[in-house]
Image (cartoon, rainbow, N blue to C red; front, side, top):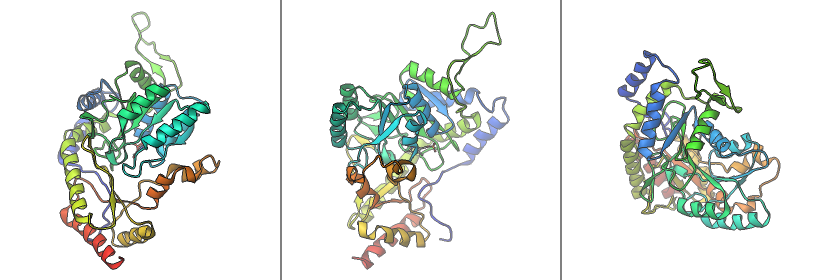
Length: 384
Ligand SMILES: *Cc1c(COP(=O)(O)O)cnc(C)c1O
């Protein structure tokens, strides 16, 4: 193996390429019919009423927060084990972010910790307006429990399902928004399906959909009776240009047709890793009968004392393993104000000291996966 083996990468076929080419020769490179078709197909796939396609999941998180009225003084909670965008979206709106420690088995927000934190917050009059659960690796959070807490404490829910398109929870697709107000997906090339760059916000709430569309397009509303003034439109709020182009949508649409095949393969790769690594001192993300993971990531926890050494060992052998993620509150932007105490997040710190993402993607070759497995087995033989 001469090249580095990445932890994830896109799978693009000639069909994908020709569907993009077709758009390049058509009348609409943007704001055309392909966006609407992509949105409709996503809604149909997830069984949500609406989909608002945008240029990234980060933009989707931003307009999701805005549509729920997040503003200065509000409080938003998310998981510390996520990409920084899960927290940044609240900061964009001037809100305060706080973190709920993860569960050490699911690696997602812990329901027990969430309950405790809500009781304290209620006493201190500091309840969150929105909670953003993150389905790490495409393994759904306990949404039913989070939903019932949202009714008790009066917060809204945005699912950061950047990893989760095609995942299933209690027989329902992630993105159906059965237990949430909004769910967002990412179409970045390392994710389950790609549009190059891109994202989408799913919802069943017409008002939220309309608001998100407004924020996506400068805050401009063009839907007026224009009989008298055919040129008329209004900027009603301060929005952005977060549109997805039809070029990107064409790629996303073409990829969406293959999503079940993609996820099946990721599940098979995971099964094979588990069968070969299960006798080593390695912990996997839990599995439950009511949750079908997309396996956007294949996460393992190794002994803390060997973590750095294993990392270096695999990197030396050109396996580009990664760590998803550094707890968000450890980044200087978040830690500099000393708002977060490490002792409040024992599970996230434990996870951070032990986690590794192994290569997993649709086109991963068996011989490359075997190479990763053999290296890890060899490492533990030498170091036990
Ligand atoms: C990738 C990712 C994002 C951001 O997605 P973009 O489309 O790159 O903006 C947000 N949250 C999580 C958990 C992610 O993995």
